Amino acid sequence: MKIFLTKLFPEKEGFPPYIYLANMCIPLYFLFQEQGGKLFIGLFLMLLFVIIYRQVFWSKKYTLMLIAVELIITLFFSFFYHPMYIYIVFVFVNQMVRLPLKWMYMLCGSFLAFCLYLIYKTVFPDQFYLVLSFMPPVFGGGILPFIMKVSLKYKELNEDLKRTAEELRIRSEEKEQLEESKKRMLADLSHDLKTPMTTIQGYSKVLYEGLVEEEEQQKRYLKYIHDKSIRVTTLIDELFIFSKLDNPDLQILVEEKDVGEFLREVIVEYYDRFAEKEMELHIDIPAPKILYAFDARLLYRAISNLLENCIKYNPKKTAVFITLKKSDDIITIEIGDDGVGISEDLARTLFDPFVRGDKSRKNDGGSGLGLAITKKVVEKHRGRVYVDTNPERGKTNFIIELPI
Image (tube, rainbow, N blue to C red; front, side):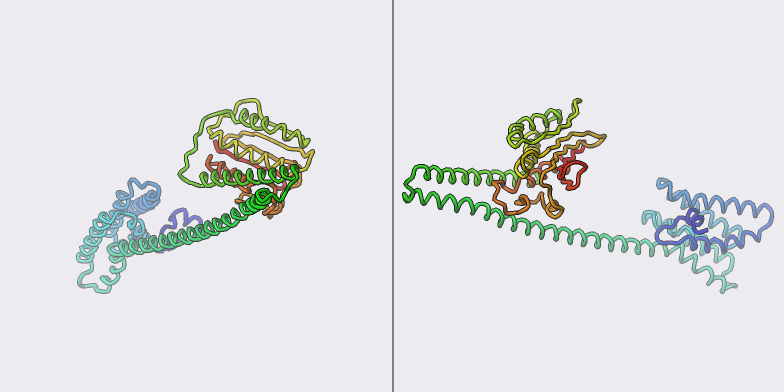
């Protein structure tokens, strides 16, 4: 029964359907007191009223006209059947609230004027108790819509304020997290720079003061200095790229190319390094062209970072799986392996700056920014990158998804 009432009288603006049914009982009671043709005309008008009431919710273009017809039917019943029919106004008063304020003034004013005329012609001044019974529908049709509209506006304003406060809270938390991330990043950066610079200073001082006389040992110290300077240069270069990609205003230079051919070219450049570690490559790239608009320079760096990590952090004879797939709305690049694997805890922070291997401060020659740069590059292409620590094959699978 409740479902039927809800379909007949949709619950809008917080009005449960039984409110409408209660307000329809009074006019229906009087209607069934009528005889002959007057009864059938009344039933027809009541059916028309219900149809129009339902139609208001689906025909926004004709809302004003339909509500005006509802008002006319109500007044028709009140003048030609029984004055108490004006209680019907409570059924559609919530619909009047949806009208612009100008039309609300006109409709409510007209209803109020006709009601006062009806009272004057039928019960005033002899039947004062009936005059009092007219007050609820007069109030409901003439004043209640404005009260409801103000109430709804206040409710909307309150919800807007709550929504704004929630957005400010979220932005404040994001800002705090960003500041904390920057502080952590600066601390990690200073650590990563200090270590090689200390080595360079120590060995260069030993050489400068002539404390090492053996030529072989001098060459070894010079190599240490050279290697550490390369590490510092690499770190600065990676940091520059990361900062550049972190700029939301950065425009990437996209060009439509075959992703499959591009991926093959990247793999070829790393083939010798895979061969040095006797790694077994399993490559699955479809022969048909997969055209996509991307920045080849940036995407090369993103994929090369994944291949670098695959080579660097896995032992010899590791199987590497490289797959390219295309669906209706997405291009997927997968780079996985059956090497050492990645823990679930590390996977959650793996794309953060300066996270490397199982030890975040591991001295492996990497910058700790490779995967963070990969993430930024993929996001610039409106895609996403994530790691699957329990793939169908192997132990680790990095997945890049690019929307078409």
